[in-house]
Length: 282
Image (cartoon, rainbow, N blue to C red; front, top):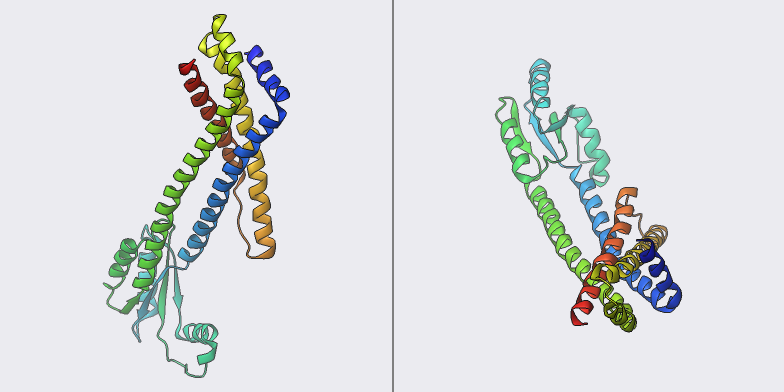
């Protein structure tokens, strides 16, 4: 292993330009993948923020006693899907309507809007089927006149999230495959540049593992350096977009480290396949 490490570092010194080209190629391959992942992350964050606004509004019939409403709210609050239940008086509903629809403030009059129970759902329970099921249960209360939750809007939001997830996974796999191919081709160039050395090692009886090890370590190191460089470029793009266009979120520490490890794995696998292919031809 010590000899393999020494040979890997020696390869960097012998061909610094080729090594730098490999690192830069890996970096830009992962940078393209990182940009896509950053876009996907921000789309997901935006959808989560919109999903938090999903709520069900059950309108209470006029003349319903406070005790009946309080009992119902306690019952509804025990639903596993429900995160919060709020009672909105007619006065509060009027004030909210005038605030949200300022241009129509003069249209709303006192006692124009009924009281309601506003139900917010827990994360993971905001899909159309769950929202529809909770709304159906709310409509069984005798004093509930009507239940509204924006059925079409909830369905479209769910469809958009599903489409974004499927598209993201498909494009992510495609970007990863392209990155592996480019990395493999880059390391293949380095292997061909040292083909005479490999041939001589084979002649003197070196095992496949002995020949592979320096290249695998070299590919791993290039992957780490390329992944770190790609992470830096992605962070720079994130800061540029946040400063000049819209505020974006960046990967947390665990995901960032995972990105560097993915770079290392890609470099390792690319090197392994390239060396293995060359050894079969020698």
